[in-house]
Image (cartoon, rainbow, N blue to C red; front, side):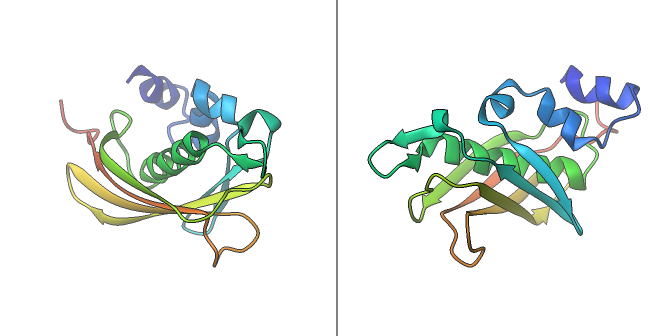
Length: 148
């Protein structure tokens, strides 16, 4: 993907904020990134257009799933130097409770990182990190910088 190369050419190869700013759906969601220790935490401030169930109100499951997947990909990019954005091989999401009309946070852990494939586990929470609203697991295809 030309985006990562363009950021590297500008000297911003590890600039996660610039990457998020270049992803239209991340901008639509209002996704933000906060660096914490050895990783990143994604932040999704509540916005009315994200509501899927107006009776609760609760954030749409598609927005929750997108946040899970983007959190995993951003953590992989934060941890590694890839020539292209990691490609999703498969993901599974567990919706554990309603994501209410509040700010949602996400954290990913790379559980296995090989040369070509990485396994990533993700959790989203709102008020209490010990009470996740959603969790996910995915496999992603990597393209190291030194490959053609």
